[in-house]
Image 1 (cartoon, rainbow, N blue to C red):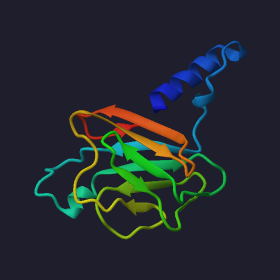
Image 2 (cartoon, rainbow, N blue to C red):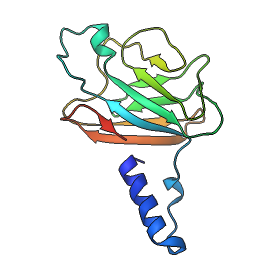
Image 3 (cartoon, one colour):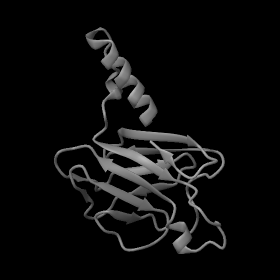
Length: 151
């Protein structure tokens, strides 16, 4: 659920006290999409790895213990899919950035390994994060025309 929707549900639930219960899906997800940097400043061409890596999505852990992201996966509206492989431990309260191009994976930066851009600059797009059993954990949708979407 996008941040605006999550915040509105929390506000309404808080304002009404115990009279209004927030939907089950309104709880803050354990791992949350916080930002999609879909159109960083500068030209998209010529397409280079450095330019591809300016485009990224950021995830944040809302847990108090580390989370192993092994086999968690992310996809956009066009079907581009990234699956966390190997050791992928996200520390409690920490963030990880997934960059579009190639590079060396670390605990705070992962690389999709693509040779083309993922996120739509001018139209609508969305990101969906799933856990290893294919349950939707979080999503964020945006309409392009800016630089990034805060989720």
